[in-house]
Length: 475
Ligand code: NAI
Image (cartoon, rainbow, N blue to C red):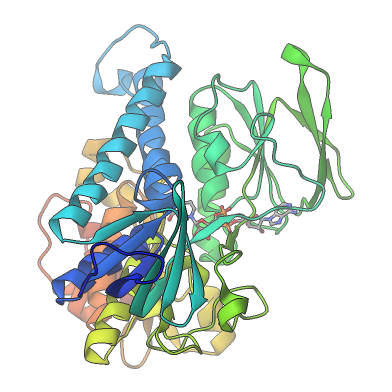
């Protein structure tokens, strides 16, 4: 039971204290409340929602949508027989809309905490002993006692030696969501999720964008043929890619309006740009959490070690989301959060990291779940592949969105679906069907025999499933 008026001698007591109110932490708090626990949540930022809602997924999607509308108004309407004068950009209004979208979401989380009776503590939480959390806030330190403590502190942009993020010329993803003007030239370090999404935003708004990627391909880790098609499409859209380009440092030149950055690339030409976006991955937020004080074990990459019920080596201390292993994605953190709390209450917790979809919200979107073709080859798996182009889908033609493809990889003997890779309009929504099918162990035949509404983009999935058995109907 909660102790509503803690003193230094009598800490506030809760069944579960969650540190961090991102998608992992706040969802875990809701699930805990649903299961009858007395839950508290500790957050150091003035608004709830974590990186994703405040400076990540949500504001980037707002800007992706706005910049796409701008680009579409300039280039995508004439084909529909709609003639308009060249649109002009009101960047302040675009940013204000983004801020309003963020506020609606963060306010929504505050409402959900209230609705579920979750007690909110403002300040930075740290473990002081097993079952004890100190919250360092504006008015001093509050001590909380709880049988269960869940660490959900997320991650921050990774640093790169030789590159100092100053928030103006050289920025991380947070800075690139709030430029006060469209940079003439933007250098992006890293062709991963963030580099491609925010590179696309500023390219659509008029920046000359060069993406420098250390690997010999974009989106390392994703299916290679998908990534290749994506690169061809983004290049046509005006993005310049330099692959095999390892950035070793950034220096600054000039002042005021002539101020710019010089990006050094190992063994290659420097790149000069007004702004530089560093997007080379993320690092778990574990500093200052009291892990050493309490003896919570971390791995060689600084992530908190947990067992399959999200329990750390210290009894009563659990961890989820970006501070543990697995993909650093909001929806993975949410699943972790629900499973961890259910594990605390019921003893059963499970999330299948092989079935976590990944979506890049560019145009076209890129969405993937399960094994890539390279992974299947490397594992020596006997697989078959079926692909279907958006070009042959009636709805895609009507939408003027024919640039896309669905690929399904299935086991050659069992026909079980092993991986689905989509590039094309609404790929991020289409992938949900693939995730559901794979969650229930569907075969390509199962998907092929599922009735899909016509005309919809979802028919491309059905056709790709048919193509696994060489019987696609519309190619
Ligand atoms: P990322 O891991 O997706 O990509 C980083 C890229 O930087 C890699 O391609 C890597 O090879 C490259 N790189 C590393 N060092 C380099 C160097 N010295 N020079 C040039 N290139 C270098 O990381 P990103 O894009 O920063 O995203 C961080 C995290 O945020 C990811 O784990 C991602 O899962 C998540 N995220 C997810 C989004 C989504 O779900 N749509 C959107 C944005 C981020």
